[in-house]
Length: 359
Ligand code: TYM
Image (cartoon, rainbow, N blue to C red; front, top):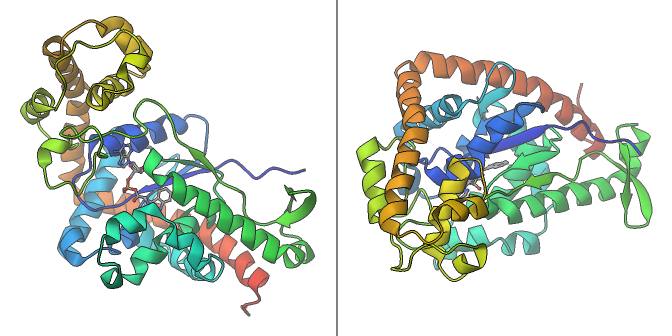
């Protein structure tokens, strides 16, 4: 049985307020994966416009945020020479494949997506159709490169399961045609062997920061759109702001426990310990070995110093890179050209598989 070439793909929406959750849950882990994988990292600007314009801010804001997110990738250590960095809308094949997936995915599958329900809220009739079909575009982002691994935070897990369902249905529906064209990999589908064109992508989710919570409410995810800026640490926050937000973070009045069990019913404490662990590349157990029994009056200043030491250089690098938008634009353009070559190779196959005439 042949294996698909390992390839990493991931993306971030340019919707403002890039925060510590985006960094620790995703971007920092992308940087680690660069060591021994080929990686493609994308600013998903087409996803940003699925919500109301008041949320994504309109054209000028979208362009600013796209450049800022790209600058954050670079500042965090993503290497745009060895790997590929670009903005999604430059590579038309994402949207082209998303159309095919609109015809593969079922209404019932998309209706179960919790992110759609959260974002559409009560007024579902008024949500954009794009918000509903968003996961099909996300599947296309990944599969247009036949990527095998996708590092993301926990909140994207359901979308990646859908990506696998779409790949599987496409493979099964077109298996004969894929085999006839000689484009498939032999893979197992239940007891049968089928000729698969798309890999079943593996989510790469994990570590102590897979789901960072709001600093104001340990039961809510840290999010770009939370109206309270105190709920999150933004990547561009200055040292004083970072320290203030950690000092003001909601906690309880108990000292830190010495084992994981002691965190189970204390979401705010659990969250801060997770942040400490992720920033030091350790795990929560080891943080509790150092701080178990200590009061927050000791732990919070230590966490603030750590966060400032780790995030300060990224913020200043982001500012330095952003001061030269010509550089960021050149990176995205060159990345887009390289990505387009790969994406077009896939789309030529897909057009043949589906039966679209082409030259
Ligand atoms: P987005 O832009 O909301 O978030 C970008 C990345 O940050 C992670 N993340 C978090 N991780 C831990 N704790 C948090 N509180 C937290 N908040 C966000 C997200 O899981 C994500 O990894 N649909 C995606 C973008 C996307 C994509 C893709 C990702 C579009 N196409 C293809 C991977 C592959 C999104 O909205 O992420």
